[in-house]
Structures are given as structure tokens and as C-alpha cells.
Image 1: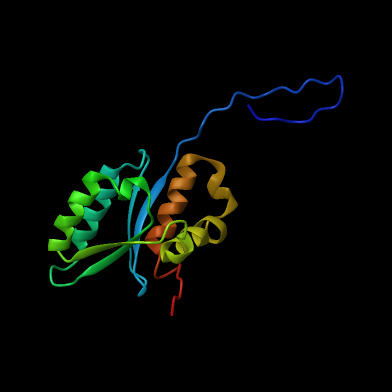
Image 2: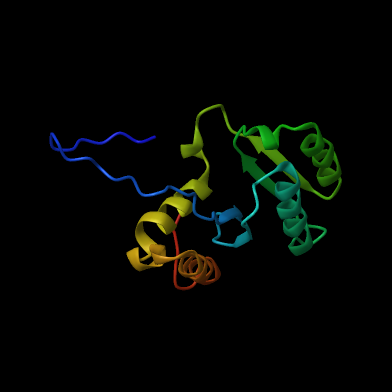
Length: 151
């Protein structure tokens, strides 16, 4: 229950609180500006992360290699994820983990910050369909209309 101040003798009326829907975006961002993303309204579980990695593999040429930098979230350290990691290595996809509590070392955190605080207009938050539409517009426009120069 949230706390609030009110004038003496005036009762505050609380509006029923309900959680809004959530749009989760998982992404892979290269220093050259290529973005591969996976969106879901489901809870992000190990299975969802594995689906995103499998999508990445579908777009990667077999002879190329990829290095994915991850934080130490429990879904990245689960037994299921670590088993899949062995399979991915055979397909030239390697996972590196950041030191604990250092999200600032992950380049994609810069992208998420830009999207949330610079590229999404305030009107995007009027409704869930509006937010979804605006987020997908930014994600699909990344590299052309929206860009970060890491060099």
C-alpha cells in the first residue's frame, strides 16, 4: 500500500491499483549497429531467452562467430541455459558473463536507455498498444532512423 499525505480531516481516496501489461524486449546489438531483437509479453524465463538465442543463430551465417555478453541473471545461469550454451558453442556462438553488478559494461544497456528516455515520445505511454507500436517502430528503425555510434 502506498503512503501519502493529506490535509487533516480530509480522507484520501485510493484508486484500485492494477499492474499494467508488460512488454519485454531481449536484444543482441553489435558494435557495427546490427540489432536482432525478440519481444514478448510473457514473463522472461530461461526458455524465452533460449528462443531469442535460437533466433540469433537463425540469422547468423554458419561460418561466422558471435560473442554474446550477458549479465549474471539467474535465467542466464540456469542448468537449462548452460546445457544450451554447449550446443551454441558448436555453432560458433560464445557467451561471456559480465562481472557482477556491472550493467554499464553491456552496450545494449545504452540502447535501452536511449529508447526509454530519448526516442520514445511521452505519448507512447498512453496505452499498451501505443507503447508496443512505438517500441516496435524504434526497434525496426534502429540503424537507419535511430543510431548509436560506439566508435
